[in-house]
Length: 417
Figure (cartoon, rainbow, N blue to C red):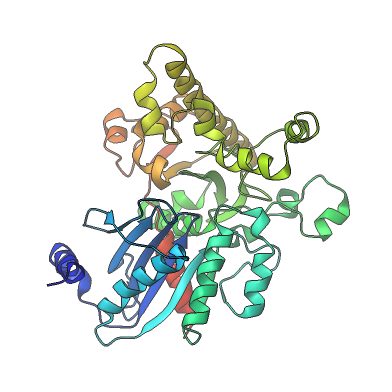
């Protein structure tokens, strides 16, 4: 028996009824510069199940040791040799999809596309014209946009009859008032599309679905969701709609992140270019890839790694402590600003990789927000429970796993009848 068939049987045995599918399947792809996350959903069931029938990740694309991992199975090295490793990774994923079709049809492929610009707020089936439009937004999201579009382009060429659906991270924030969107630049900048767009919209859209299910009417009040991952942002919601968010024109704004600066005095950028004579490309590398937690610590972009070095002697420990302290301070400062916009706070929600799994980050942020009447239940926080605030807390503090892939699959099903 081949290794692929052995792996498939192992997943089937581990997941049981997850493979009792009956309808057409929707593939969701979340493409980054060196990784592709994938998830397969059964569109034949109504409502669309939130649990995928199959998912996983190809990572290290273009590097010396790429790996392929499916949920329930340890990642293993995968051969992506050749001139086009990204194409090879897509073909590896599609081979896994084809092995699971069992006579069914692939309904569509939904892609997380970070930026839709001022033209695309709703999911759209991608044509050559749409693809060309979206390439114009690559400078606004260089870590994600080009790779999602490359994947769409490859699949459009190889399977032209299969609908490719672009699902935009900017879309959820179309409800922002003009006063939140506009940048204090000359008026013609607004007319050219330079404005605050907001990101992580698929995650926030899922929160708008999941939070009222768990918290009822409380979620429809003054809510702040903290999407804390390698990229990080906050969204202030009222009535389950976005009214303010920390990311703006690009995915660099707002909170400090794993490798990105977050909000930065533009004078510092001018200084780097004018006085230190750095090129545009060099400044871009600093802002997107060499700053944030990684840049300050010199160790890692992951808080769970840095916390292990806080007690180290010398510069290593000092830089780890400073990096984490700045990350927490930026979160606290931006939450405070959004509380002011909301006029108070009823519900604070942590989500995404850091938000869902790093109890010490949540504890430190909430410690510094005690003036709002926030009190944590230490045991609930340590256990990553759905509600981590104490009974006496004036603000409910929650942890809610995000599900961007399900939102994208749902949008594809609704668009392609």
